[in-house]
Image (tube, rainbow, N blue to C red):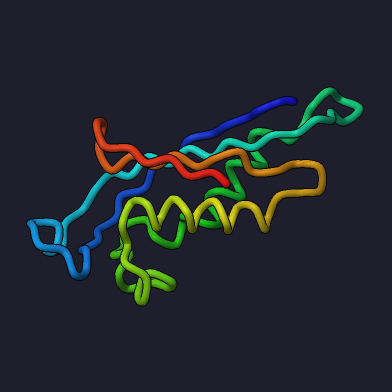
Length: 121
């Protein structure tokens, strides 16, 4: 099994609903998002999926949030934009976009250098 991953960063704000603490106020992060996929097969060139293709797909999912407030954009206008919920959302959306033979392994998301969440099925 081959595992490939890419990382992208966005700057975005959020505020947690129903949270008793400073994160209930609007604040921002430089979010680092890592998507890892896997494939058992290689094409005739010896590639499972091009890194650039993974990057484009990830940007397709997260790009709309860059320099915006998560709370203002679906689905986070309804779902609490916690790191956990964002990672789960990215995983599910990436999973829908991957070509046949390539599957999601996990998504890791950092709010800060020290705070990270990972999601996989």
